[in-house]
Image (cartoon, rainbow, N blue to C red):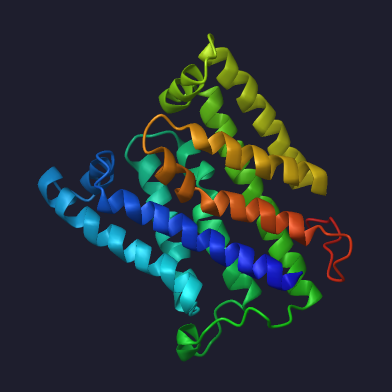
Length: 258
């Protein structure tokens, strides 16, 4: 079971950053807003985007073929920074919260592999996917997954309540005549589900949310495939939590947050 969780999270991290890097390579215009925070103009931003995007793709591939501890360490930092740039550029705080899977998935991988040890050289050693994880560490990883799942669901629900333009366009394209009401209904349901995951997760519910998340992210009006791929961290966190709650797992989490 621990192998399944580890492999799920590694794949999730890889997919997430390959998708994120693809946006840099194709030069997604909204990224200019994030470069502007550092005083970088549009011309320079468009020249830098492919370089940063390529680096993200390489980090994602590295998580698949040679997952050194340094990679998830960097991706936790980078994933947090890039998510923070959204509210710093004037977007709602919910945009940061909704992307918790971007930095939460590599954080969970790092926790399962022993975290950051005192020996600095350790960060360049490969992560052992088959290493035994003690019950205490397993419980901490389970808490991490629950918190991250709560954040990404609550963040997306909040964006719905705020009637984010992209989500309204998504619902309108699917044939909903009152996109605002649809967004409010979905948003409230996602927020309630987020608290349920945090307080007392049930495997059936987690599986349903995993299917919902993967399905609902398919209908972005622009960059559909890349948008779906970039949210790999969200899918991976939910699926890993589903594995962690398996009643047959000897290291099953007890359900207590503290």
